[in-house]
Length: 74
Image 1 (cartoon, rainbow, N blue to C red):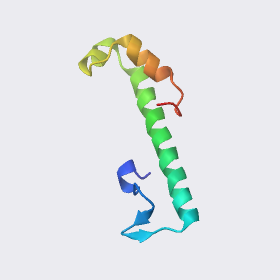
Image 2 (cartoon, one colour):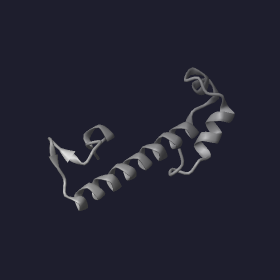
Image 3 (tube, one colour):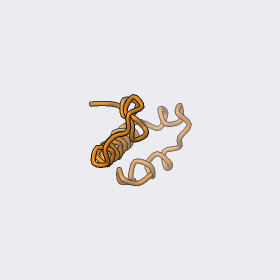
Image 4 (cartoon, one colour):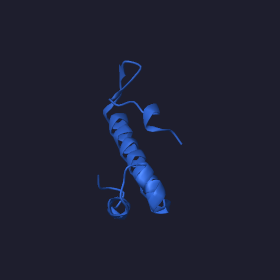
């Protein structure tokens, strides 16, 4: 699965402007990849114990709040 770095951040590939439909599809792909990354990150947060959460600078309540968010919310 491509990472966010492999997806161009604008509507061009190597300087060529994409057709409108392709640009829209690229935006959709970018959004879906962002959602998937959030889902996986929040799933990982749920698995960390209090000690590991403190190591990354989060308290358990803040981690639980973040993990409870749906994938489409920042």
